[in-house]
Amino acid sequence: MRTKTLLLAAALTAAGIASIQAQSNVYSVNVVGYYNVTIPTGPTPGDANRFKLFTQQLVPNGIASPTLNNTLTNLPAGTIAYVWGSGGWSAPTEFLGGADGWETDYPFPYGNAIFLKNTSGAEITVTVVGEVPQGSVTNTYPAGYYPKGPRIPQAGGITTVHNFNKVGDKVYTWGPSWSTPNEYLGGTDGWENGEPNIAVGGAVMISSPTGGSWVRNFTVQ
Image (tube, rainbow, N blue to C red; front, side, top):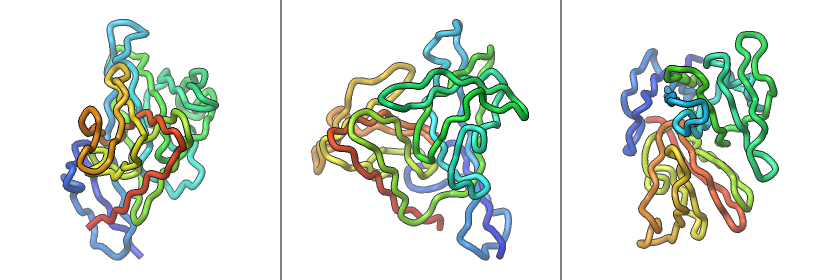
């Protein structure tokens, strides 16, 4: 059974996956693609521009238990990651390069978000390659604060495209500082401060009183 291979450009549209090039005949529902995420540099080591809130949206090589070492090694040595856990960001872990991998190999579940920091003097392009999730895709989050991103690699509105719709939950966007809290009011009221848009590979910080399930139904046509 052959696999349909797609190239997913970074600028995917809200209406659906665009800039797709089929590489073979379609004999199965498996769809493989890629996207690029750019991490800028900054004038000083602590510059906020060097930080990118990032999520892994594609499944590489059928990996069911993703970690930093088995999903995120396509970047320069010296890149720093911060992983959310126990109510805050972890100590920094550095990518040592090659077979050395990450200094600490944190779990990196699909749909979770981490901070990547560019420590170099030039912008970094992170290329993510893997299978596109299809069907009903659920991304759960607990009560309190938790960084999450859409499971589907599309750019667009967090509700109109990605179906985040739990009334009373708030999100914060990064760019390159945290936004003011933006609450989803539901119905025709929508978002308190306008609907947030999320780039491919991007994410938000969710603040939820009770936690929830972020569900998206998606099929590549």
